Amino acid sequence: MESLAEKVAERLSAAESAAELRFCHDELARELRRCLTLEQMEQLASDIVCVHEAILRRAFFLAERETMKQSVGIRPPAWCWYVMGSIGRREPTIWTDQDHGVLFDCPEEVEADCYEFIRHMAAIGVDMLHEAGYPYCSGYVMATNKRWAQSVRGWEQQLSSYFESGWPNDIRFLLIAMDMRPLYGETELAEEGRRMLFSAVAKRPPLLARMGEHVQFPPVPLGWLGNVQTERWGPHSGAVHMKQSGYVQLTNALKWLACFARVPAADTAERRRALEAAGVLTAPLSAAVGEALSVYYSIRLKYSTEAGDGREYVLWRTLERTEQKQLKQAMRTAKRLQRFVARQVARIHA
Image (cartoon, rainbow, N blue to C red; front, side):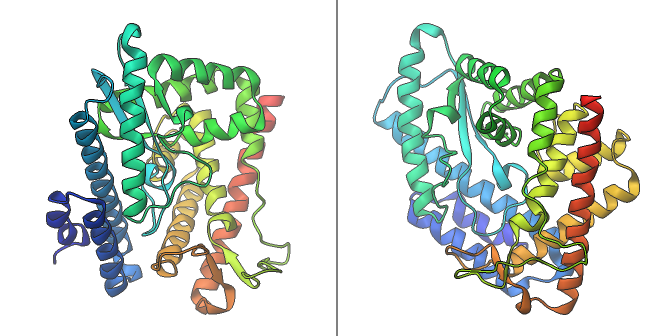
């Protein structure tokens, strides 16, 4: 049986415009609606990641080609466009926003000209992805933000300032950066950038502890009696926000534990397996976390095949009874993992 990725790949490889990229993005959504079943979830997840990555790579290629055609600045000898967020962790749904950046390396005397090339290329790529159905990141975590488009020297200096200050926003940026995964260009630049980040944080127990405290929030919306706390007011009254109901808590906890154990993996599945292999997570807890992540992902996919704001909200009453039961158990697991992180943080403070 031909996979989703294979159905889209041929058209995508010849795409020359944002409109053609958008067609492939829409085609992925149409195909998903036809074959979304729990039994196919693992293959569907793999196909969705593959198609997203292929669309982004094509957009980055077209942005690079256009920038070179216009002879803007100097192309760095080595550079890498990396992704973060759900695509960086290899767990995106159909409609995901942009989370990416650029790292480059060049002689110091031409750095200003290389920045000019990177900024121009980033502007083209970001707008092209927006036209292709990837909303601008509301937090401006994109290559058009100099925070996320840096020379290697600038990146190291920026991280050093975050390490020293440890303000809440700095901790948030460090946690975002831990998802960085190379997608186009000189992959080793982003790989080394992530490894350096994990190593540097692990060597600073006070900072590691503050980051561990940060991942205790937001609280999982599950009461003591097992009641799910849905939105009470506004347009999403009676709904559950699928990312904030335990999914973010799980991914952030695994990210922190990977740093704690010095396992510089980029995606959630790899982090969980590595933590189990290292003995940080017991086999039963690791299995429970894996099941919880699958529940969140399958429900998010099923109820968010349409583009638009609010797609992460799902009315509790629209969920099937089995889904409600699975989601409650996933929330319990998320709370359990948060408590586990809290115990590790307490040991650092001791």
